[in-house]
Structures are given as C-alpha cells and as structure tokens.
Length: 149
Image 1 (spheres, rainbow, N blue to C red):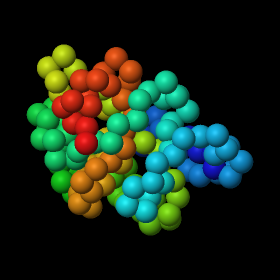
Image 2 (cartoon, helix red, strand yellow; image 1 turned 60 degrees about the horizontal axis):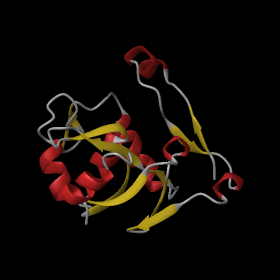
Image 3 (cartoon, rainbow, N blue to C red; image 1 turned 90 degrees about the vertical axis):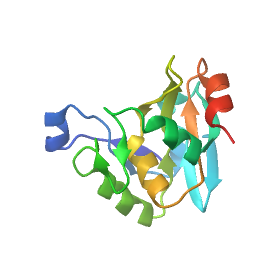
C-alpha cells in the first residue's frame, strides 16, 4: 500500500501540506506496521529513523492540552485546521491503514506534533486508550517515560 500526498486549494492557502490516500499494495512490503483496535498503523517513510512508542492517550492529552497554539479540543474544535478532523473521521470508515502521528518532547516536557495531530485527536475522541506514535530518537527515552505504556 502506498500513500499519495497532495494539497487542496484551501490547505495551500493556509500553508498546510499533507493529505494521504492509499494508492497501491506493493509499497507495503517491508514496511513496519502495528495493529491496534483493528486499525493498521504504518510508519511514515520520512520517519524511518523514528522510534514507535505505544502512547497512553490520557497522559499525553493532559500534557498536550497545555499547548494553546496547537491543541485540538474534543470534537475537532480549538486549533483544528479546516476540514482535516471530519476528513479523518471519514477516512477511518474506509478500513485503510493509517499513517502514524510524528511527535517529539519539548524541553518543558510538552509533546509537540510534527505531523498527525488531527489523526490523534479523532482517535482520542473515539475513546482510544493507546495509540502508536513515531517519536524522534532524541526524544524517545523521555517520551516513553512521560507518555508511554
């Protein structure tokens, strides 16, 4: 399975870059996947050096909610971008693999998303207790201690 990335006009105007779509089965060969709650998660190609950590949603969300510039409130409010939240709600119904969110930990111990905060927010709002996330190698030990399961 291969993921195609593209821009919408409204996303381009807002400076946002990634939308993903499953394109082909051949590119999944050799890719690492994790299955949680019946959903297959895939490491993004650009995060191949990252560490996958199963994340405790309650701990993570408590800390992330302190980031007033990036936090997405339950239901897709707050700092959500356009239609990304409802678009991912729909995407989940298709049964396709989900590209993992990419995160790190700031010096203040606050988690920071590089990519995937809308995906994470939808799963959180659907009641998920654990979600696999890609964490940069430098942040991984601290992230595991603070938010890992």
